[in-house]
Amino acid sequence: MAYEQSNEDGPLYPKQPLVEVATEVNFRGILAIETARADFQEKISSEYPNLFVPYAKDGIAPALQRVRFENEAGNFGVQLAINSFSFYSRQYPGSAIFIAEAKRLFEIIEPILKPLRLTRIGWRYINVIPYVRENGNVPLLRFFSTDTFLGTGVNSEYDKVFINVETRKKDMHTRLRLFSSSSENEPERESIILDTDTYIGEGGMSILDRSDAVAMISEAHDGGRDTFESIITGEYREYIKGADNE
Image (cartoon, rainbow, N blue to C red; front, side):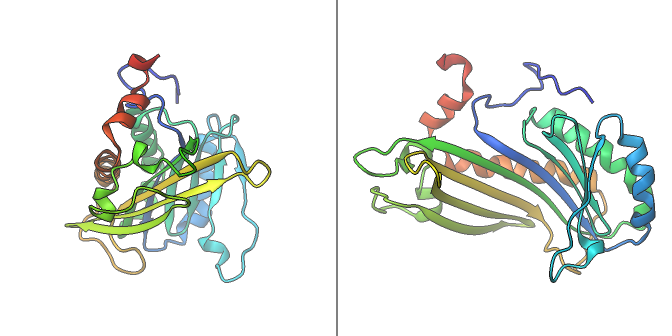
C-alpha cells in the first residue's frame, strides 16, 4: 500500500490534530482464525512486517487478545483476534486511502469467517487539541459548539472539562468523550482530548441482520464524520482546513 497523500485522497482537514483513527469489525468467535493468522501474516508481511503478541491480561481470555501486525514506521497496523479485526493509523492519510486499505485487509481474512455473524462495526477518531488558557479558562467554545451536547445557557468559563455523551440515531450509536488534559512533566502544556466512537450494533452476542461488513465500515466512517462536523465551530473548521490559513 502506498501512503502518499494527494489533493484528491488526502485528509479533508490537513491540520486536524488526529493522533489515531481506527475501524473495528467484531463478529462471533471463529477458532479457525488461530491457525489462519500465519497465512494472513505471510500475505501482508511486505507491508506490515512487525509482529506484536500481547501479554497475558487478568480476566481476558488469551484467544480474545489481538495479535498486531504493524508497518516499519509504526504508524499503520492491523489487529486480529478470534472475534475481531481492526485497522488503525497514527498518521491519517484521509478516508479514501484508509478505508480502501481496511477493506483490502479484511477481505484477506474474510473467507474463513463464513458464515460471517457480525456483532459490531465501529469507527474511532482520537483528536488531541493543544490550547492556551484565556483569562484562566479552557477556551472550549473556540473549538466546539457545546449547544450540541450540553444544551444552551451553559456557563462558558471552564477550569476543567470532562464530558461523556452517548447518542443513537436509528442503528448508529456514538460515544463521545471530551476532556481537558495536561502533561505530567509539563503541566502548562494542556490539551483537549476528543475521542469519538461511532458504531453499528451492540457487540456481545447480539448478531446484526447484515453481513456486508465492508459497506458498514464506510457507514460508520460517515457517522463519525457527521458527529465531528456537528460539534466543531466554524472558526475551528476554517483553521483545520489549513491551506487558506497559511
